[in-house]
Amino acid sequence: MPEKVPDCLFCKIVTGEVPATVVRATERTLAFRDINPQAPTHVLVIPKEHYANAAELASAADALVSEVLLEAHAVAVDDGIAEAGYRLVFNTGPNAGQTVDHMHCHVIGGRQMHWPPG
Ligand code: AMP
Ligand code: ZN
Image 1 (cartoon, rainbow, N blue to C red):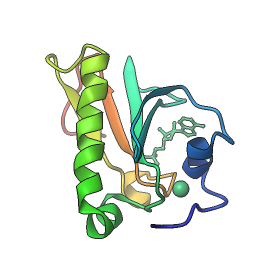
Image 2: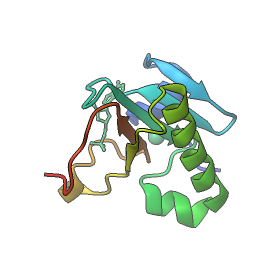
Image 3: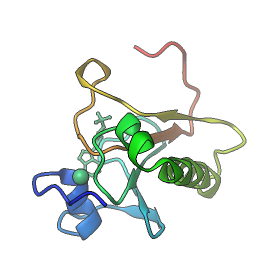
């Protein structure tokens, strides 16, 4: 199991060192509201263990990928947006705008969204 990374913001949210509005938790995942929401629902689902991005998580702990996705859908159900539709985003690397190197799945919805993204 990977170590907690001392300077990682999301590891600190897992330990409670940094507060967050937690909406769901399982033994291995945590879901909390984004501090700078881009839509009425904007929640981040993370593995409690530190992985830098989605590919790293998938290669190290593939079952946990499914758990993150199931929790992302559960967030949408909880917020009443599952039927209307929602978007899952895994920013990976600088060109995608990844700012926190602890894998997270953005669950975004509650308004009409457009494709392609900017
Ligand atoms: P990304 O740009 O994909 O790395 O997404 C990182 C996300 O983390 C951004 O949408 C931020 O608004 C969000 N964020 C940063 N700090 C916090 C925090 N303390 N609590 C909740 N969300 C945060
Ligand atoms: Zn971390």
